[in-house]
Image 1: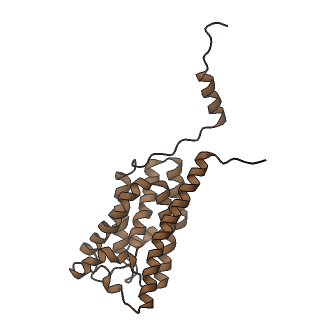
Image 2 (image 1 turned 45 degrees about the horizontal axis):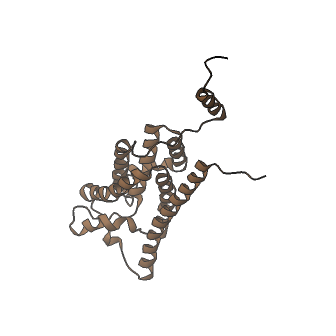
Image 3 (image 1 turned 180 degrees about the vertical axis):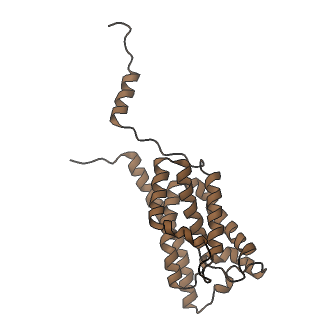
Length: 219
């Protein structure tokens, strides 16, 4: 006996695969840059964000693609792919505004307020995505938003402490600026993506059919 997949389930699966493919493709760019840096014996850290320096302003564009080591890159890749997939799957419309805001706004905030050092890596964007998914799940409270926020919290909830200054070599300023932007945009964009259709159970369908029946005036 063959089992048919419900149309909404099949569509959700396609959306999830598409979201995963898009996020992995973006993550591959970070690895390509790192391999080029190593193969060419280059030092790309100097293209990171150096606060309040005219030359360091270009780092707003380049810093997310630059990582200090393969360890640094690997540590950022997994949360970027997981959280990015959840975000792209659940909030594709909001993502179109969120990602540029984190990319440019987060970088600009680091350039304006951070310590005088080179700030590199995609972690600021990751923190923005993390706080967006966690916050919007609490604001919307529909089943998809709750599920996505729970998955992200269980996997990466411990990352929230990264907004505090702990290690000198860690740019907590990038984490904090990304987190604040993600938090604010969760409030502003909470209704940008429609809620998923509510699942209707068999007994509800039977009641609806009964209500729609044209009862005769007389028996």
